[in-house]
Image (cartoon, rainbow, N blue to C red; front, side, top):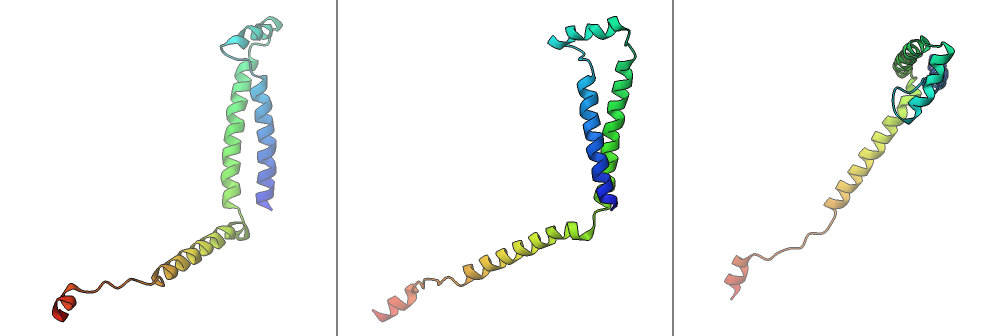
Length: 116
């Protein structure tokens, strides 16, 4: 239950973070010339507030991600055990097939010298 709530909050915070980043005016580059309209309109402190909001939303996403990871149910993480079991079975199968390969016998030189 907590996992689902965390995922929902992460999605909401991510969408808000995208919107906040898109609203911010660029510091330099070609689009910086278009940011002058904000200063003419009298919106000067909005840049600081938007930057603080960006950092807060990023921190919230990190914390919620950690909480969601800790609160995962064991059924969600049991998939990795199944993968590990499949990998172990495959390794065992390869090892048994490699041991079952027939080996060519090389006659010893000492036996051939005695017979002549």
